[in-house]
Amino acid sequence: MPKKLIQPTYDELIAEAIVNAAMGTVRIRFDDQSAPGLVDFGLGPRVDAEVTDVLEVSSKRDRDTNAMWQQINRVYDGHVHEGLLCGWAVQFQHGATIGKGVSNRVIAFLVDLEKRGITKVTSDPADLFQAGNQFPSTDNLRDAATARELGLNVVHQIADSPDLAGRIFPSSFAPTGIARATADAVSPYVNDFLNTTTGANKIKKLAEKGSGKRQHLFIWSDVSHTSVGFALKRGWLPSDAPTVPDHIHTIWLGSFFSFENVYTWRCEEGWRVHRVAEVVDSVVPPS
Image (cartoon, rainbow, N blue to C red; front, top):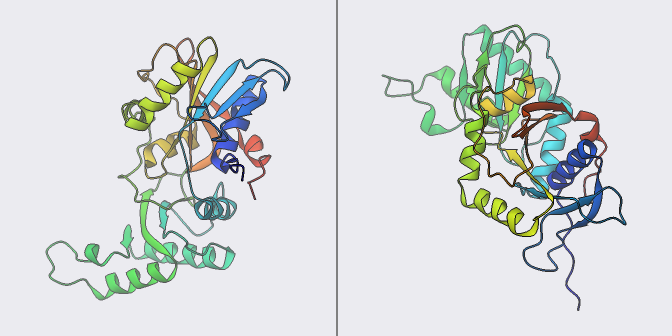
């Protein structure tokens, strides 16, 4: 029986569509895992042409997570919710039910927290104890129970600035601290990724398989890195540069935090922000 060919994931398809739209290329071939060591995508000016660009994508997510994020983005992405005075980061439990009914209850929960001056609630019993108290308060327990019922791990207030008021920024991973209103975390994030085993392998593959071609590395930043996600969503440009091997033509940086924008970095151009919402909307998720 012939080996079943592996199709690209939704995240890979989005990355490919973004690069093709920006570079004026189309897919010529992709890594169907029929042979070892293939680059994720070989791109060119038309389907019957030679490959001019090679693309590696850094992310793999399972189908359930993809479906959950499509639903989360439909409900929360880009919306300003009346009644909220602050911005909130909301971490959903994996597999949580997302929909209008639940979202209305989440918003009402956050409004109530603001009125009571509560800036963070966690459903993790290990985090329920207030500093200096032996036992959690009744309010702690009630709020934690509400969070669990809504499928939430953690909610925490980000800021009360006018540009964030009423906005909910969802994730399904633990946020790494409070997002900063700068792009200072972007270049270090890229550097950290390139220093991982995965990053090093991507760079090596592009060098070996993409000689003489424009080499692209598309990095999907984890939603847990809220500073990267916020900077990208707000379109803030980093002032510093990542350390990227000379053979890489373009670093692309997107975020599961939002599919509205992506960053590019090239040695001769530095950082740029590209609006890609329409491109992303045109990508059909794999069945």
